[in-house]
Image 1: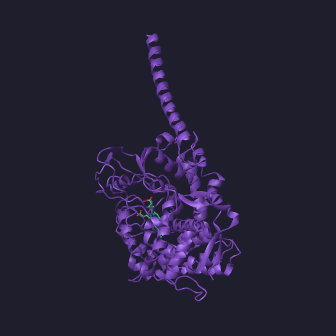
Image 2: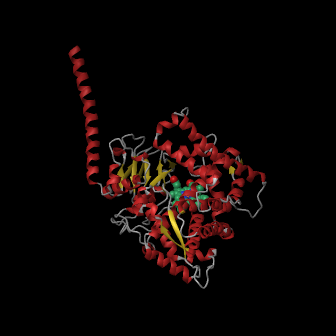
Image 3: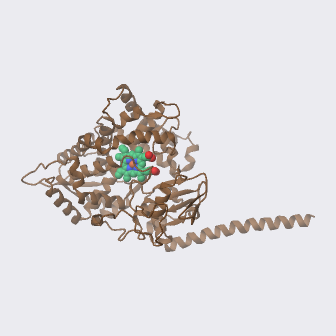
Length: 535
Ligand code: HEM
């Protein structure tokens, strides 16, 4: 009897040992294979350490590792093998057809990006959701429908002067500073977007650009949102932090959230104090006042308004500001591209010349005529999608994609990898080159026809460029972002040429300074440039 018990125990232990050993061996083999074969930079490859967690790397090289994996294994692969500290399994997808299927699949409606909880913490008092973090439910639908009106073409046209004013303020600041002084254009452009959102969305000028002044001047609101974002990122890097609220540095993080929320609470109070909005007022503030919670059929409570209002600043300021920053960085590295922008602006009289040192200012309708400038922005967004990590979706039930070929088990996250979609050679020619001219080809943002010739759920059409994402959860602020980027860059290049300051250490120095703050690629040392007047 005793012998049989020992025998059973021995067999069971060996089986467990064998299972663990074979899993570990498989993981190690995969890891070593990747280390040797990944077609990515040494720096990116070095991030794939056995203890490294791809999900929590605080560096844009995370996007590059994932993009390199897509290069190697094709556009669909499982990520669990790589995540030693895995909290969930993810199926990573960079195939445009599958992405289009995922984003339109009714069952895959759970927002499962793992960082949203900290955004709720940063913006709300009791974990109330905002438009980005909410599930695709009745609450989200009712708010999205009402606030989408604020971004209609009609509203953009009506309020265009507010958008344009922030860019004009920056032109003035640059003129005042002169060409000799290196200006942190990253900071300047973040200020522009803060002012755009406060003016356009809330009928208030936060005055970030003027207080920035081109020097080291800080703007209290911008400072508060930047610091809170960096602190929030710390929670994603170190998951245990959320249980360590008693430690001084964690308490400090929560204090930065409170500081940011104080600004937002004041804004919400001012909006409410102004009373019922005028019938023709369709600003974000007015629309938020009109929103009703479908559960109670009552206007949103203060607790609901706070994260909703905060989120428009958070979702809009560093996405737009960083996109413009990377655009001017790319232009500074491609003089021929700048020469073509200059030609286009000259053609439309938006360029400062000795005969006309103050150029015409573009009207709303003019922006779509600046086709080359628009191509430059699109190409910069392809190489530097602000939300490079894309988004995650999951379902409570098993979902089959690609005509039943790919199973997404219930609870598994499908990770839509925007950076990989826009930067792999499977999908783009000269994928790593900055070539705005490619946008002259009509329909370039659409994926090539499928190799198997099949039409999937997407009916044979899918996008391969989606910095704003596609489907019902796409970026509601896209029209504002596009208008403000074209308007600001038109004004900047009409008046100045930008040269990267020596202190940035050339393009390599800029590349080395890239960092992630809640998924957005930032130049952590700023983007110091000389703004050289055209006249
Ligand atoms: C270049 C600038 C921008 C980029 C690249 C961008 C990108 C995105 C992306 C990829 C999403 C989807 C996120 C997800 O599902 O996880 C998103 C959502 C969103 N964005 Fe933007 N965004 C930009 C500017 C703006 C601006 C200016 C605003 C408003 C002031 C804004 C407001 C929003 C909102 C409210 C959502 C949530 C939409 C929903 O779930 O219904 N964004 N954005």
